[in-house]
Length: 78
Length: 363
Image 1 (cartoon, rainbow over the protein chains, first blue to last red):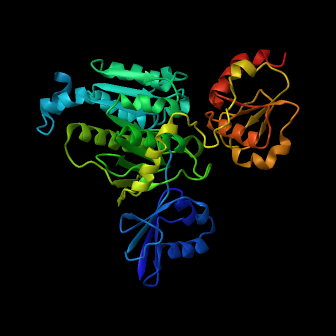
Image 2: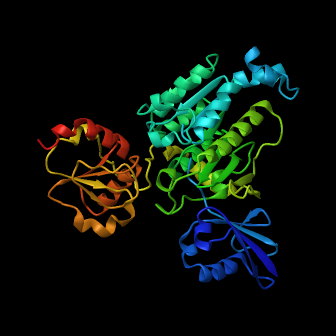
Image 3: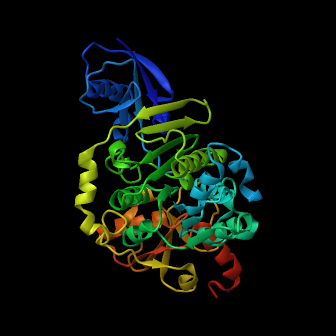
């Protein structure tokens, strides 16, 4: 199952890309996808962010169903 | 009413809408990059009562994006300087400047006086304070935040909708995310995001269009891609805030806040002896302070450099704005260093003061 992962804000400084596509097994949970990403990007684990699946914020125990995952960090600047 | 004729001509607004605007009361927290465009458009639209709260002073580096200010505003309090400019733009409305910091003590009383709260602050502590204050006083919150080339916009706590705590339940780890003064920001970005915030304010007052409630708009100035994410309401997070309502006023800023942060002014300590000055900024931050003898320890490496501090002296810390130096004092207190103070002025003001008086320093 191909999943497009979008990165926002300072997360793109770790991933060096705004989005990428990963092939994940059916039935994978969001946090399992995150563990895969942490292995790829070590410092991602130290960052605070929320996860959206198909443009909706979801809990990390949610099953991957959608085509698109977004990792969204908070911004403080004003 | 020539001033508002272009609004009145719109059938969606008309004289009825204009009257709604003139009766509305909006408080803008922070007159910085976001606050300036918000204030400018609300003032020119004729919002009847506009409050501005900001404790900070205008610096030259603000002029790149904080469009209400000019050279004549440098050194002035931002709320006061913004009011001066806005009064020139529209003297038919009431503009109230609060030249103070938003704290747990003054938030609820202040928010009660307004219909809508706009968050243009630049740190998480204030953002959670504003959000929780809006939950307790039941006011809609027009949220905007920026990072380098990206912005986030949403309307929280609107007609029973989700709040900032439904999106990000807890503030991030300290120091994990820096603000504009520390990392830089595209000047036009707060202009775009702040204008979107002003637009949400006007739609709410006028009762037209769709309000950005339950959704977070993510804008990227480089790719011009907008992503709108749906936010679900998390009742538990809102209840937690309401349940702690009685303690709200007695809370202090900075989480570890049973500690008082001792602050000093450069004016009172420049000529004192037996002081060690510590610059907490990164090595590329300007202006450099040349005249004084200073050691440089960036805030994030402070704890690993405690041995560089001279415990026989009074340790006086400063940074770009006074934020990091306050944090540094609380860090040092945890390490039982009691004789330390935060300079309340930022580096620019400190440098200007020293330059003015440096001939007499050390004599």
